[in-house]
Amino acid sequence: MTDSGKSEVRDLAAQLATEALEVLAMLMRESGSDQVKVAAARELLDRAHGKPKTEAAGGVGSGLVQLIEAANLLEDET
Image (cartoon, rainbow, N blue to C red; front, side, top):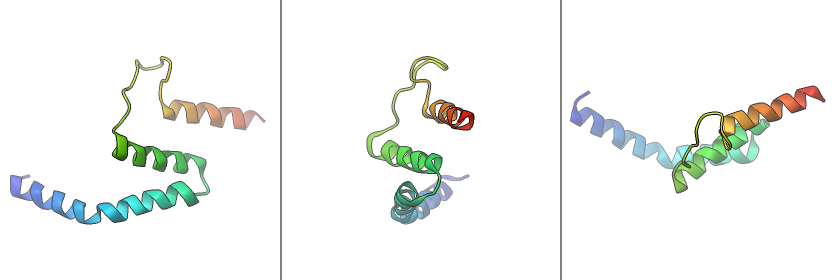
């Protein structure tokens, strides 16, 4: 892709940024799925504060996805 093409894509994305944030906020508040709510909240926080530093895979704080998967496994056992 040329530099002018990249610039055009960035401009188009910028025009939709507010709407995209509104959709994420709506999903965070109104989704029937806790996983969707958490994912939307994480995306909003990443954009507001930057992504958190990650630790070694499988270590303490191994990631939100793993925590959600673990929580789902616990729910399935009940």
